[in-house]
Image (cartoon, rainbow, N blue to C red; front, side):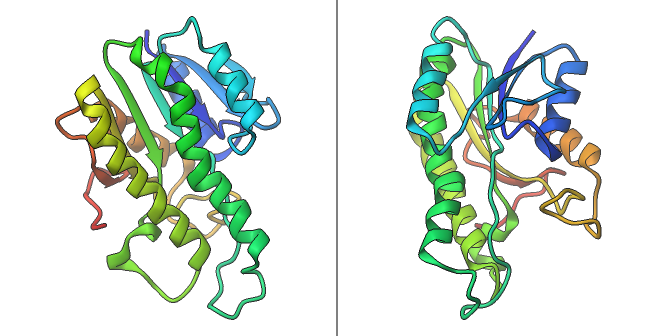
Length: 220
């Protein structure tokens, strides 16, 4: 039975991944700021932007061997163009704190537990909106944050491969969630199923990948 920690597991794709992994027999720790992750095996309070919360997470994992960490917590502010008033210093600080700093610090807090597993993996839920080749003139803050998150995943894959820890970055698709909206292409069930297949396929040999939930590579 694999042990998985999912951040942002209280709703949307995070909650559905927790549900599907739990159903197949994995032990899933659902991390969320509210502490509510009803589809996981157990729910832990976790705010990826709070140093004290991450320190508590590291302590709580002291006796755990973690097989899979899914960095799923994310924030989106602003879909407009350069002069949109939503792009404030505060907005940049908030989104980068979740989507970039939060990813890095969560991985670092979980490293001791990941090292205790014989086959450990880290999955960073990024977005094709972080692809420079597919850049468009909108959603600047979210795009920049996801480009940075993908870069973190690829860079970490180089360092951690020597320890047998595989790291990959993944686009969940345009999903019908609060963030994606009701007009999005796919359901949370389809996205979660595809992502889990990607996590299962991830290895040190394939680490550093940037892929759609369906498996196609994304140009960075």
